[in-house]
Image (tube, rainbow, N blue to C red; front, side, top):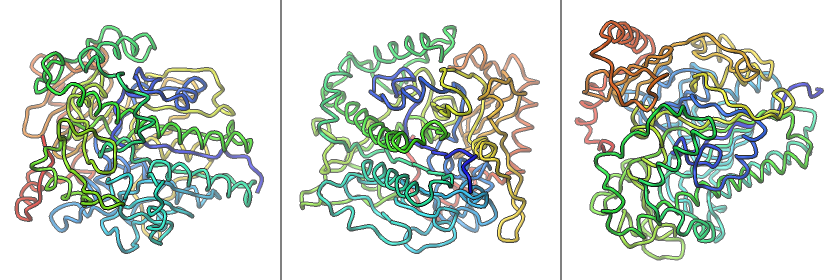
Length: 535
């Protein structure tokens, strides 16, 4: 086979806000992502699906998460709820590209199978990936990750290495896949899905990386949010007419904060997690460059949801964490792990298990409102970088057209000259919900589309300038996104006909795509005694 199609590298960060990385206005040093942006395209209105598992399901299938069995997380809530297991009746990017002659590799977090101990049809090795290294689970210790597999064999020996750190392992195995592929199959294009767990909690990082940020966040979240907005505007990423959303009312002014040094340390460790991820991305870029593959590799970078406001009070952290992932009680050398956000206890080492919390998530999502879980802009807006010199050139560009996760699969298939199949294993699959972004990436203006979101009863629909959005149990809010993307002026009362039209279209979409009413889910959780995520 001759190489006339690009390699594809799809990079996904975990729980990282819109404005954290350098090329999107943040304080964090991300020279390798910045390099991609300086020679590529940044999208300012690309949207994820507000939560890790649904976002991954949508990203990989070109469908909305409810259509593929994963409306919330990878819990099997049948018969009343979602299966939590990637449906057999959909096609992944890896499956479609494999059928088109691509080799397929994955390194990192999967989080799309309800059974994480016994291989089933929702494991990456059975959804089109030739080789896999990573975790089936959604989160956990960066020093002792659970459900760590190489293909379908437990990779516990990897984590026994005293130098093991999961972000580094994800990067190093991605490099290994690239180099071994080139040595054996240089004439065959490859698809690499590089899915980091950074910077998802817990706050674990190398001390040398943390030291890089010592003092960087001492000015506090109020001043830093203002500074980020200035950089976003100066870069052309945010319209200067959009005012900064207010500090979350549950967050104190920085001047009134107790334990300032500990609070700053939380953000320092978070920054170090992103920094380490960027270092690993740099390893992959160097490998591609050394092999002469960088220019004809389509690289995309994005995050699965906005910054995460989840707190970990010491008195309830075990109940919260263990409802999702087991909490290690001891470090690898037998020291106790102290769980929860304990003021004065510096996060970072293996012996801690903390989050950076609502106040810093408010910074991460600058200039927007809300967080992971919610579908206001702070929960769903992601940085989105595209780099493909051979097709798109090397002049930096910014594109303001709105797209969302369902558009990634058709874009990659378009770039690869591959088709979207009508069936899988003899069963029909739903038509792809998205469109190729390639025309827009090449400079065309695309037609107005309607975008939809639902997660945990939080819902939104966007068409052109209008976005209708609500929190579960609250009334619809209407925003003119062209004039007010920070969602500060609710126009629902002024435009009732727009609200009625968009609400009706949302309900039709929700019914078509299999959105289960939140009331039914909550009743199911109450019957089963399952904890709910914190507000």
